[in-house]
Image 1 (tube, rainbow, N blue to C red):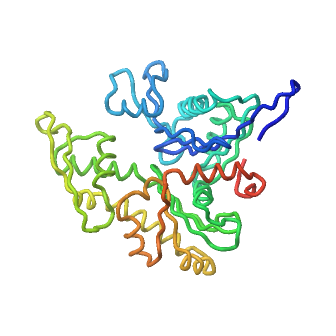
Image 2 (image 1 turned 135 degrees about the horizontal axis):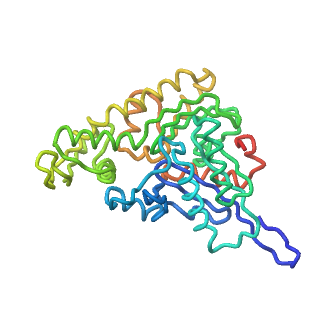
Image 3 (image 1 turned 180 degrees about the vertical axis):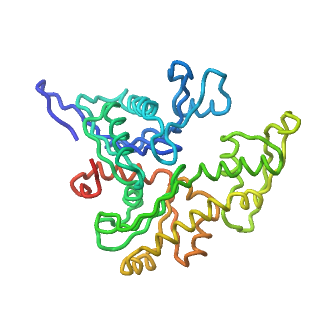
Length: 344
């Protein structure tokens, strides 16, 4: 997209798509693709609330900050918990994106948001994006953006089902004719799995670990279904009895057992979504299967568990972490075609 100015010079106007996630924020610039993928973490001074680090720099500080500084996640359970910090984080990311580009006109911004958020939370997202320099803000429900990102024909009468498992929320939506026909949203995601691992190690090994260590355990040896590929990992933390650092060896079957509660909550949510799906669309889902996106789709064996529980084929996208921002980018490329899926 480009516009002429009085000087006769053609100046590019790049619109922007944002996946404002609990765990990561991704930014897509029209005509360039995904240009930023950073953790949604901000390090702030406790007294003056001055920002000392944002994104990956701040994530490295989690559990390691001195007394006067805290590393926080301004988005909790898929929604904005701290509007001011979110606004500063979004402004920082958009400034990073626009620093090397000519933006003579403020860009239009499409933001992916959880489908279960309230009108108040939508206003918080909009005000954050406007304060960060947007000319106009459009919002799209994350399951819809994910469906567009994986290439599903959302504008047709055919039923498409998407499971989007993020850091704070899991959303299951049945989509047809550019709308969400039925939607189930629960505030369970990757963060709940991390919390379950922290609790398990504290109770069973008297070992206190931080959030980054729990996430590393989940990624390396976590699983939702026994596939006969058992693993083990050395975990370092602080002994709660002696107060001295120690190392324990944790096995994948232990981690699988300790995350069963949040995993079963996701399975139950999928079942509920299928129960409320209109029968004509349910028949389409039997034929086409279910697409799984989001960081939670990378949990080993989760697709096999859902296949076993639903008797339906589960397809995992090759790049599940970027589905929402890719879909928002496709919407930017053809706003006329996808206008029906947007809210302002």
